[in-house]
Length: 289
Ligand SMILES: [Zn+2]
Ligand SMILES: [Zn+2]
Image (cartoon, rainbow, N blue to C red):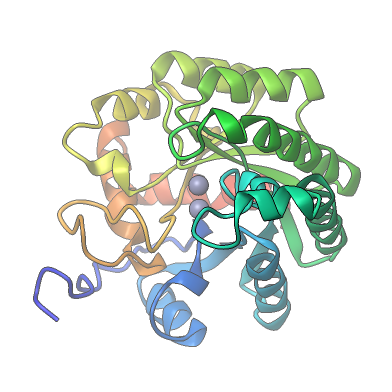
């Protein structure tokens, strides 16, 4: 392993304990115990483990049952729903998926997400939403149908909705408005600008900032963070993705939350303890734990 692929060093511990509001432990190297121990050593004592397909959602629910400081969110990722309906171009043929009844397959998968969402240690339904970056026009209908179904599941079970919005801001806001958003809605890896942050603020949507808020070219994101009401701001890693600067490109993990949180405190012009205190309270309120 060359130095530039190596896991970044442990940052200085936070003095106020916080949560990583969105992570994928099942996609990271090492064991869950190792990841949680490393995170706890720097003050990241709670994580929300997010499932992206049926298998990952089952794993998230099981892991949350096993660890008191792991909470689960369950869903079919916006890029997973079209894959179920149309067939994975890298897997079985698209034609085959249609013959097998892709819409029925999506309904079956949603049924399993519904069952998992009822579990007491599952606090979130997501990540769901729209992704126009990875899913082309042929998958949009399946993606939107799946998004609407997840909103309904979240509301029926009284769980927090976790939104994945990639290059789809207006349509995500439209669908939320049409369906009626659940009481608690989190935009994970918030990617809108300051104008959208005002809309989210008016709707009471939480905005969870990931490592990309530290990237040089991410000024619009920092402008959004600067205007978001502090009580709606969360922090996440989305690990193993989006490692914060100066470690961009190296593997991400929950223990790197302090790096992003410190950058966020600088954007807000507040002390890191004040930022951490706000985030700790906000995350508990957002996920109702
Ligand atoms: Zn996402
Ligand atoms: Zn994610």
